[in-house]
Image 1 (cartoon, rainbow, N blue to C red):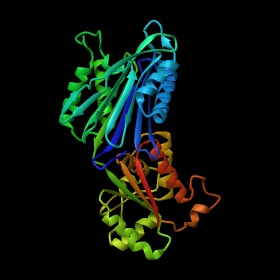
Image 2: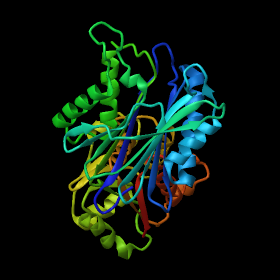
Image 3: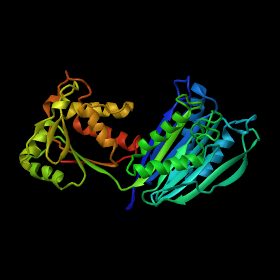
Image 4: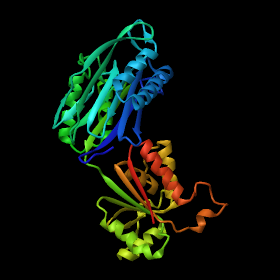
Length: 392
C-alpha cells in the first residue's frame, strides 16, 4: 500500500517451540482491493504444536476477514471473543491475537486480546502506544478484555508485533530474570536500527526472533513470532519480457527502460537482443550462473538482471506460490529482486513465440501474458506489492 509519502513493507519471522516441528503461531496478511487498506493478524494458539496451530490459524483467518468487512478492528476482536471459547482456568481465549488495519491516509487501528503490545519506532526511539481496555463477555460468559489503540503513522515509522514467545524468552533462567520484556525489546530495536537504519522489515523480524532464541540459549520455550512493518519510500522495479507485437515499437520499448528510475530487469533472450540493439549495449554472459541447472543469466549496462524468458518466469511463479527461499539461480535472483521492491511494473511484448505453443512442451510454458498475470496476482495478494502490467 502507498500514498504520496510512503509505502508499507511487511516482514515476518517465526520459530517453533523446542521439540515441535509446527509453530503454534499464525500470521495472515491481506490487501483490501479497491480500498487501499492492509490488514495484518498475528495469533498465538494456546499450548503448542498442531493443536495450537489450528487454533491460531482459525483465529488469524477470522480476525483478518472480520476486519475486512467491519473496518474497525476492535469490532472484529469483540466478535472473535464472543464467538470462540475462553479457557476457564486462564481467563483468556484459546488463541491470543492482534489485528492491525493500515489505511491509505496513514491511520493505524489496532485491536486484540492477550498478545504483547505493539511497539512503534519513530525517529530512533522505540515506545509502546497507550491503549484502551474494554471488558466484554465471552461466549462462555467469562469477562475478558479487548485492547485497542489507533494513531497516525509517519514516514519512516516502524511497527513491531510479537507473540509472548519473544517477551517471555529466558524467563527463569540464570542471569535473565526479566527475559526479553517489551522495554528490553524496545532497547534492542533502537540499537539495531541505529546500526542498520536501512534493514528490511523481514530482516528486522528475523533479528528479533534470533535475539529471543539466543536468550533462550537456542532452545525456545514457546512458539515465537515477530511481524515488522516499515513505512518508507517505495522501491520500484521494471520488468521487460517479450518482444513488442509491432516491430516499429522496438525503439519505444527499449527507451521505456532507459527512462525508468529504479531496478531494471529483462526476461527473455529476444527481448534482451532488442534492447541491446536499440540502446547499443553489449550483452555479456554471467559465468556464475552456468551451474544453476537453468538457462544462464546475462549482464547489460544499466540493467540489474537479464534472464531467459518463459522458463525463468515459470520457475519464478513456482517459487512465489511455494514460498521457497530464493537461491542463486537466475530465477532465484529474479525472485529476490522482485520481493525486495514495492512497485513492480511489467511491460509485456505481445509478439508470439511459436516454441511456447508446442503441445509437446511442459504445461508450465504458458502464454506469456497469462503467466505474467498469475505472477502479478500472487505478488499483490500474497506479498502486498503494487503491480502494473502494460502490453505492447
